[in-house]
Length: 567
Image (tube, rainbow, N blue to C red; front, side):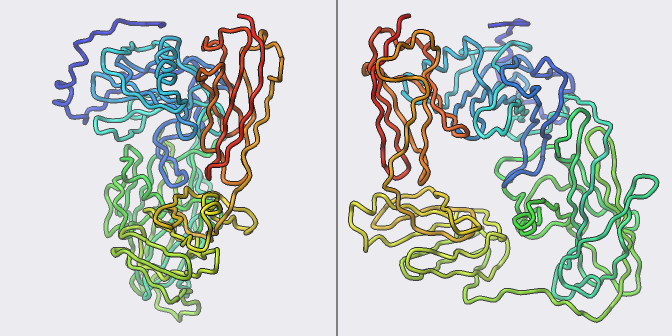
């Protein structure tokens, strides 16, 4: 290992660590995990699909293989490798109680790589999760631990970097002195105002209103004047950018005032993973589904326990009274202190309502604080307590093999269970069935994790939409990329395949050479399987290769060949 310090093992007596509260955040404890200037592809707290971004996405100059260093002394407490999510990830526990996380890695440093490969071969599985003890893999600040990559759910080469507190809550790395150049103020692209009950309206309407905003000479914005009555709330679409990149990153803080008095403050310092999905309650979820743009509500509705809210008054809701004037100001600030403001003048006025709120009324009404069950034909639906944020009329209708399961514009916080009666199917066919969600065009099915139990086909989902029954009797397709019968492979370092399944998708794969298990790395983004001959499993000249790939309903394909290789 490359080391730039000495580990003092007495620091790993963590019983002393927990005596200290993490209120005084160390600003010079952690160093840059890369030896290049930091340029951000993503920032802490950024709004992502169903979650807040839990760290920094650091650009790696559009390439893989940059050296990744330990930010401080500690020991590797967790290593996780998965096809999705963080891909290859390292977790380092530090003596002060914090943990740093390094994700989407290409590979580990030689010593860590050997440790991980040993575990993978013993388990005979690429995907592993191990928790080394404190003395197993100690590291020092600045020590090489890995190389940056693009594994897992990464959309391009970068390093995902986190700092978590003693309770495993991700914290904003900027709080710890991790610094980037930022002279750009945040951008506000849209502003909305929402009537919040049946007695409230804006500009004679009970529907949300998008406000026209215009930039002033001082770079602030002013919105058109609105006439309102009753309880209203605001929302904005906003991004931040740092120097050196055009990525649309998240903001650090939003503050609102009414006539100069603060009534709402949101700050992205830290959050818990248990609360992160409540992002769907914080944003205008329906607008996001329709327009693919996230609008942050600047008011707090029921069933929203997010800890990122600070000094709010009346949940950020404005109660507008007839004949009074209000000056509502939104201030968006990034961590470097750059600020963008938008001022919204409001006139309280009782007026004639010309556009009542559109309401959908159906035969099925679900209460957010109660479980809900629906049965029609062969389908049964169960929505648990707390899955809905609001009491909701649900659009539910089943036909022989499809289910209209309400509207995607409504968020689901917990898994709903969809069940389908298999009584009409013979044993051979039912094993090939699955439940899938139709795309918006209705011409393609996305596999939803499906199980067969007690004569029922079941799936758990947190997305409303149209679901249907699919049948997959076609095995996966295996395409060798550089191996063929009788070929000499001595000049190759890697054994490469492409594997595809256009219906239910790939579930598992297993390869052996001369009966010995070989480790193969799967990249679902490119449908590739790769074995590294440097694992030294292949030691014979003549080698009989067997690869079995299985899809999600149990169809399997087998590829066999014999190749030759000299070491």
